[in-house]
Length: 421
Image 1 (cartoon, helix red, strand yellow):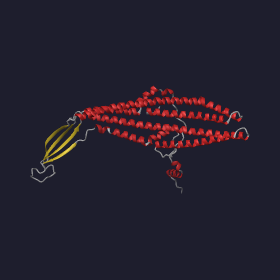
Image 2 (image 1 turned 135 degrees about the horizontal axis):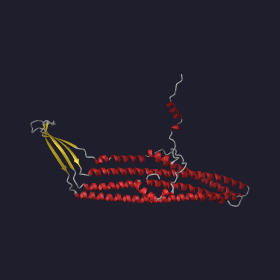
Image 3 (image 1 turned 120 degrees about the horizontal axis):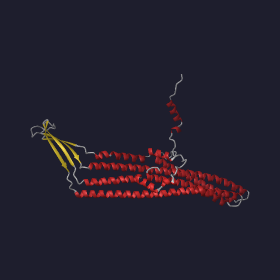
Image 4 (image 1 turned 180 degrees about the vertical axis):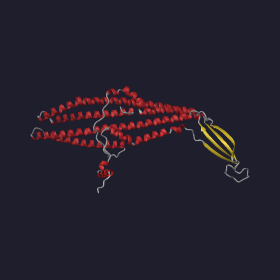
């Protein structure tokens, strides 16, 4: 009789037999994969979200009335010495049940609730700012990883070229058409490039460790080398006037500072409300024996006599409001300055890339091909050939650096906006 193996048993067996299937797949091929992972796993962003949630839960208690109080007083426990002391309310001289409720001056509860709401908005802004900072770091690291990866590929291409040039130099040296110094020089260049590869590998490992730190993953977890960079928005979308308006309306820091100003205004208003007294009202039924025979009403209020203390509180609130306004102005100046700087940088990177692509690189390749043909014919020395090869490497590296710099500038602009362009 044949027995059927359950499907889940086979899946489990395959997973245990092949640990690779159960491992987390590598990420990093696109910047979106990094952002999606960090949004769900970064502990710093999670802590800011929880703090914002906690601030939101403070709104209801801030506007609520204080809990009422109940006081029970047993009067004349011995009934003028006629009996032993007792705690039975029906056997003492009288029992008073006092229920009281504190009532703040009109408008104070609303102000406290408004302050809590504005502080919750500020916490939300700080959480958004925390994510914008983390996202910018990941976008920048992704661009840097792209730069290192392509720099390594370029270095290996040039290294292969130097190996071929060494063979040409050896052939010419064997035929007495070149000096031994040409062969040695090519070998020195190869050694330098191999050293560059070691440094690039180390930089890549450190950068991957930094990315994993932002993702809350082990430092040695796999990060795939980027395939491509995000497209840079068209120049029309990078207009300063348009972006300035968006930054003023959506920047997380400015949003939090604006909430801070409104909160300071409410605190100032509340400080002036402290000139007026708070009340306490109460009702007291009085029990004699087993029945209620009397009812008492009570009104209590504090007397705001400490005017010097209140004036100091009012001046403090005025100063805190002025500080909040100055803080927002300083933030706006810093943010708009960063916006202008990065817009200029992204335009410079765009022009540099275009120049390298359309002019420097074609010219360098023509120069190298001409120098190689001339060297094989004995018309130029090996140093001229090396210089032409270095120009190709420099032109290609300038192009890659310009692309990565544009991405890093774009990441800074999006951090200032608090959202993607």
